[in-house]
Image (tube, rainbow, N blue to C red):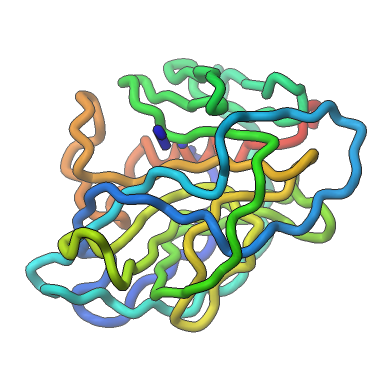
Length: 265
């Protein structure tokens, strides 16, 4: 399954405190578990329901292996605090808008990018042909949080336009340490997306869950960070999740995802 701008506030960015933290890690491919418990039930609505054949309980993700400076180890994370509210900004001049088939959600994207619909949702595709994020509606909630692991939040910002039932979803770019990875050389998972799961605190968090409450059930809009990707045209020399945040590509992804809103607003 394929995984999604400038002018947005950076929100809270958390960094590891020990040598050889997440900022020095490379990455490979794995599976993001989308389960921090069920999102709050969405209130009744008259909007026409949207469906998709895909489940939001799992999405393809990227993983990373330790750098030589920290063989076989991963940095403990710091507590992630709730990001301060920030106003959403208007789409840059020339950007296009996409509205889901059911007419309930809309987001903006650059004129050189595209949106491709399929039974698996709407894919946001970059100018060099790579799917950067996927929007799905009518999906189920993630599984219950049965285990926690060390985490890192690199970027986080609220999206007030998607607030429902007193919960404001947020854009989050984050990582998890996989305690028992299938591949010992790939112990970490990286992904960005919109979530209404509680912000992680302390030193451990539930698996990444980029799902948020939206009628008739829930929705998901997210993608992965994979510095080992070899798609022609991708940003060069991006070998850490922190460096990726400084690329124009990341800023475009964040802008597009944070522009997600109820159609007509």
